[in-house]
Image (tube, rainbow, N blue to C red; front, top):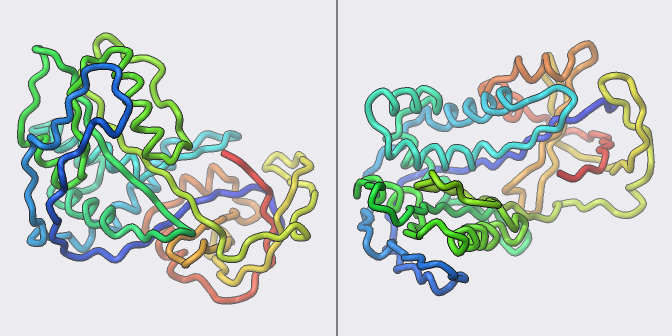
Length: 318
């Protein structure tokens, strides 16, 4: 396929079903470096031990995919690379929505595309069933950090909901330099060292942090050998040719619809996949992005054809 540019989407497809959560032991704050007076509140928060009776709405999966595409469209900027994690944003907004009510909650649910009573069990089941092996792993963790301040009042049911559905670590801290180090240390730990720092300071008016940390690491099912990597010219959307290293390979999952062609390349175990899409000639990348919907992406992936595909992918890092 002639290459102009590539839109890359990482897709994880899970089978969701009912679940009964086992009791989670109290967390030990001593497991992380503590410079400030950080108090672990997990042991004081009651979580519902069994959520197997929660109903997972059948249409929630399509709603979540649509949210992911809408988020991508909103963040896309021409002539710039866009990297987002819809899953991470969903978990952060889901935790936040558990503390909202009235018009604020209605507006949040409109953005999410579903009500929080449907989203909570969906995200719980999604996290519980993430496939993991020594060759592939998507790790995810959530936490809530509360400022130890008399002006902050946090309702118990907000903490209970997020402990139950999101398995959130919950800490109370003075929000000083020690807390800054602790938050960054927590993120560093739960992203396998890939994000060393998320905050460079804590603003004076900050009262609460809701954090989702996500890290994905996997080996290709069919790794590229040295002979499959060599220089070629990448042609961008403006017609400019740039010399880049390309990775060449024959794949066997071909994607095509009226607007695009592409391929699926699996990671070890075939539980996760990398998807590359290229808009057809005459369709600009901005036009294609704005035309994309969750349903359209879903149909494209479901209709993958098992045929040989010669692929050339420019090496990139983000």
